[in-house]
Length: 213
Image (cartoon, rainbow, N blue to C red; front, side):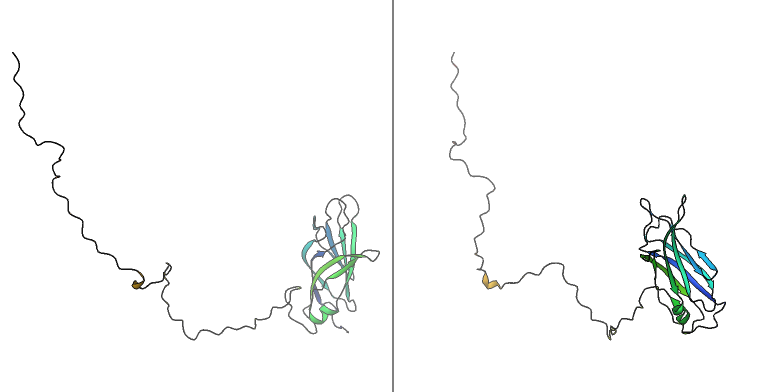
C-alpha cells in the first residue's frame, strides 16, 4: 500500500511499557529504558528503576513523518551507574497500520543480537490524517457489546400482600379428639375455728390441798 503526502505530518507514539524482558542482572533488579529511532529523530524514556522484566513508562513522543520511511526502531537498555549500559533487545515497528487506520497498539517483539527472544515493547501510535480512520477502543481491550437481554417493564404494580407472621403456624385439631373434662365437687370451705382436741381435758377450776401446819 502506497502512502504519499505524509511528509511533515505528526505521529504520536506512547511508550506504555515492556513485558518479559531479558534479565541482564544477576543479583539486583534491572533498570530498563526505551529508545525510539525514526530517521534522524531519537527519543528516550526515563529509566524505570527496579522495573525488572515488566517496566512501565507511559511516556508520549511526537515524530515528524518522513516520506518513504515506514518503520521505527525500538531499542531497550538496562541502565548502569558504574559500567556501560546493558543491551537488552531491539525491534522494529511498521507504520502501515497506523497510517491506514490512524491507530495501532500491537506489541513489538524484541530480540537479542543473536536473534533470540528478548521480550516485547508495548507502544500506542496515533495518526490523525489516516486514510481510513477508525475509532479505537481501550488498548488491547475488545469492545463491549450491548447485552441482548431486554426485560419488559411491569404493566401494573403488584398487589400488596399481607405481612407474614414471624411465628410458626401450628396445626389445629378438632375437639372431639380429646375426652371431656370431668366435673368434681368443690372442696369444703374451712371453718373459722379448729375443733377441740380430744387429747386434752376440758378446762375447769383447779383445787390445791391446804398447807400443813
